[in-house]
Image 1 (cartoon, rainbow, N blue to C red):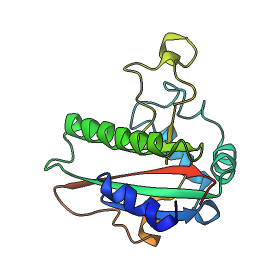
Image 2: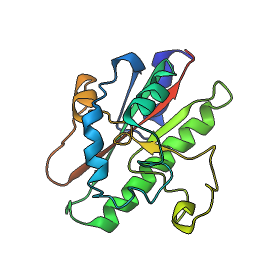
Image 3: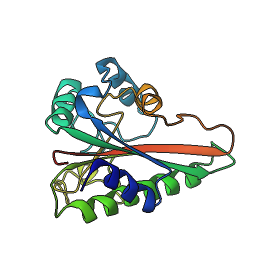
Image 4: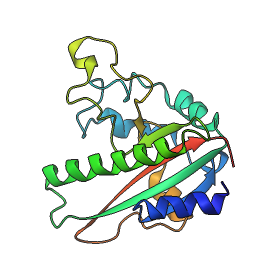
Length: 180
């Protein structure tokens, strides 16, 4: 599958935008780890896919760069109230499921890593909170913040809007892989 076919497939699957990027071109900013440590999403030290369990900023950058390519994916959602946590959570879940479904279709071609919006949401309550091992270690995914990616710069460098204005909420994720 060519890079053009891969982007076309993502768009056909309902993503608003998609771009193929070499992982060496992803802007990593280790200082962004503070965004996770602020715990605005409530998953810091409460989800195996989030800091501190996911790995240091350097380890996360190395994990991403252990793959050659990233398929950058964007979804856009009509949500009038950006403070509507239930609508935001629902849209993030749909966004992450879209990425997982696309990856499942691509898996026969190559193994890769999913990067979602917010931390892993495969379980209603992460096993970490219960003192148990991860239930789905092969499917677990971290978010772009856990990787310390400068998301705004990254997406805008690839022709996507980070902020689409009032009433539109954007989410971003990636599929990290090695084949083209």
